[in-house]
Length: 434
Image 1: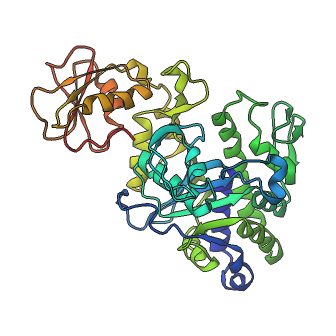
Image 2: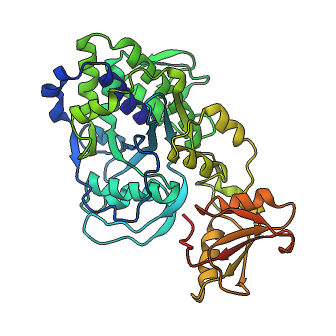
């Protein structure tokens, strides 16, 4: 999550820096990734022209100076994944973290050797590894990640940015460090961190270790780590705006950030970054919203899975719909709406095949079962014009949990529906669970 704070801080600082004096010295720092036609043509529409969605990946690369964090990996790795939404009026921005343990549908992607992966369900950060495996590059890793995020959120991703370990440390060091206040001591061998309890300023390896620590602090989950990362990110972005007023300090920060930055070709360069940033410099701190997609442990739906989380519906769908429509969502509002999750395992579903394709209900049922829905199947009495969700009295909330997973489908009450069961009738428009 802090990588997103770094990218946002870069944009905020460029917007207030005057820009021109930076072009010659920093423009060549930024690496570009040519995505070409790897994203395909079946992508979500941008329904809010002027707004921007930037997918930011914290690259877990172990090359060069990063080798101390683990060698021998055969694929590219992503440590953090988020979407930075910049409003069309440039009056607010949202940074939404997607936990790397999120269990999602990963579409077919091109690997580094030109072969293709099969679509399947797994942790969302595997998409970066698939695209970057077997000789792949950042462009391939980015393309598969973009396809996966678009498939599962319905958001059109306009730009991509990747920041690695070294760039993060350089940004923190240029600010003189960031104050953190752990309530208990943190001793984490994997993160190379030994930190005592209490408020203190961290930088360099300590700062990186603090945002990477997971198993040795708090509840040991990725979502718990995200909370600490969000606090760190808020401090980083705020301190960057407040402290980097001299050309020397600003240059040091931006030099570290841009050297570790890889973007899509359209965004690669100080000028396009400056053009995007120019409208952001006046965004107040209370309208920079640091959010996490609502989620809960998949164990609640699939007891054998103790390693992943699933997104909470309908709250996740509402969040992504609001972003697509360029509607502001605050952390307070999202937290309140997500306070009482209704687990998929509590929603009994009947899938009826209303198409001419034999076995369609069984295919849909298998996908739903992966998310813990108890499912039965059957055939609709007649072919359906389109996919629908119906429910009996008293099951409106359960029906919304199911319907919200299928864009464009609205649940409707049906007094004659099977008691206690939500019915999904497949029509010719059904595109599967994403």
